[in-house]
Length: 430
Image 1 (cartoon, rainbow, N blue to C red):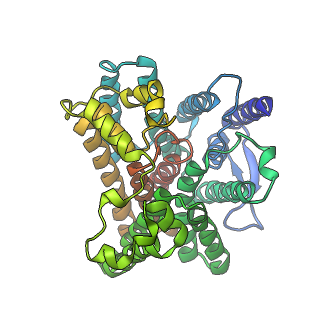
Image 2 (cartoon, rainbow, N blue to C red):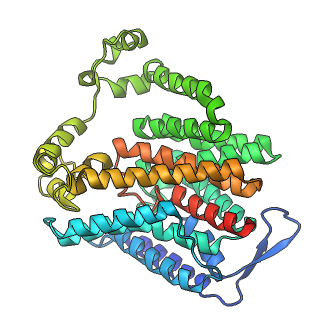
Image 3 (spheres, rainbow, N blue to C red):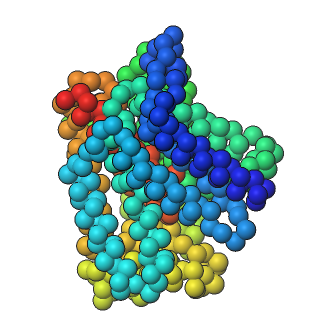
């Protein structure tokens, strides 16, 4: 199976390069009218392949981190694609803020304990912006937007099948990302499907897609991705209805809190003494953070902040510092090698400056998506905008208690991919 993962990696990498550099492109069925066909050029083909295969990790290899190699290969191919694309990338204001953040964490490498780990952290943050810029250059037609998004949705459905159908998962060990990364990936597909339900006439089909991608995080009882899904749904409501959405957001938030106490599996995983935890106690303020079972997370966060944040509040202790410490001292935390909070890692590595720059960038992207959705009359631009803005806030919420950046190929690639497509479609319409 190890050799199969290497083989799959080679096949998809060679295919990606072949499609990217194709002079004649490829003729595919139209995503808007199946009775017609549409010619995709090389960069468009590569975009469809890359955007729809973020769930493929190929994580098993002979002592080699194949996931890191795959990430680097994709970044190189996207940079090549920027040169081959017929249109120029769109360097929006939020992406300029992202660039400032990248420069700041590069500076952080110079006072970090490990240059190699620091570079790897930078590459994980670098992938979403490179992918976004490539999408803004390659995707100028609704056909490309719809084909790549639908392919991604089909890949997500196949992944769910391999995750839930007994025994077939043994056929693909290491091919898919971890279940936690899958659940965060599904947040974006959930939001896209919800948008498709609103913007198309295929109501029943897209409602089923929406439900399909909302269910895994609840079935797996992944608290972080449940939170991310709720936040994404609230953000989607705000983009769609503006201030009128506030009552809807309040109801969504209330239902989210109630689910913690009324769904047995969630309550048992959430608290140390689940039988004593009730919604009434929560309302009365009789439940504190000490009652929450963080699965050692709180201990990890406290230890890291004491060592690397206190006294280094503004600049942190260097890019990759938290990761180096976790790997070298995993025995302190029951074998865990990651801190399960990108917020804590950003504070420890790059301080409040790094944390603030990234947060501002996310807010700027969300604001750009809101503005585009409210002002544009094109349905495809609006669909891309509401999907990008809502899914980004949902995925960003997962920074609180998961390793979202470590999974950037599967998690952050989705909202930033949608944002890049929004920029390209918006430019073509203007």
